[in-house]
Image (cartoon, rainbow, N blue to C red; front, side, top):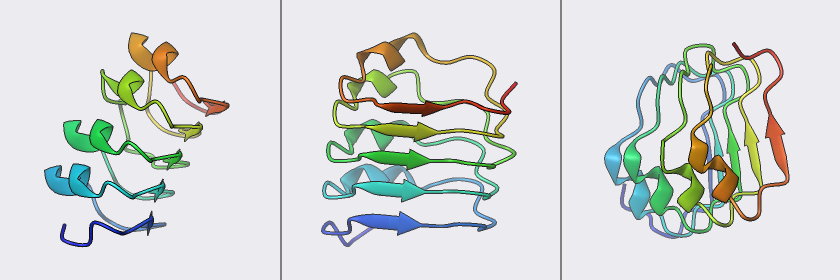
Length: 108
């Protein structure tokens, strides 16, 4: 990904199954919306997104797990995983200092 000033990525309803590893280079990204997409997992580099505030995976029916080191995302305020295949949350989620919303409705 080349636009390092990008603040929002909205892939609502897309057929994307994976994100490129270099998404972690988008240092200004604040919102990642993958609602109702076919995404299965996020790349490990996602935790490099220091300014990410919203991670929205609402109804991404194939999504199975959050990164184990998600706790490194200190500015993350909202994680929306309603309607996903998530069964277990990573222990590090408790280290998300700014987390205000954790939407788990309809998960496994």
